[in-house]
Image (cartoon, rainbow, N blue to C red):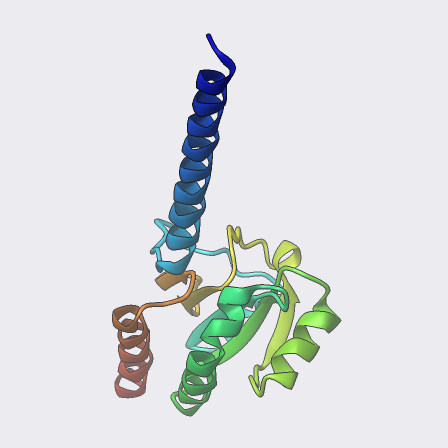
Length: 167
């Protein structure tokens, strides 16, 4: 094999590796952008969550370093006040230091009732952002992960508004 052919082969392998890498990165980022409903039926109540203190609880799992959380802030600024208006308790679920997460949410004008750690709440969070709408007995009414698309946002808003009617 001559040197020119070897360089052509090497160039071809390098381009193929780059294409595969870019494709995998795109697929990973795409999977994080889509909201995914989890097949979990119930979350055990505990002292940290105190689900029984409210008819419904909206769990908002975020992290200050999460870019999908930052991109979702305008939606959170709309949905959290709506939840409060309908009597839904809103709890921040921190996957980082509680004080850091609390300060992050407050600095972004997201007013929540409490912030708890994901470990103490015993909720399996596989990524941020994650939103969960729970009943007072821990039954999962809705579970979304990632930056919500518009139909998922509407779905969550409709579930929150249905709480207003059920009161």
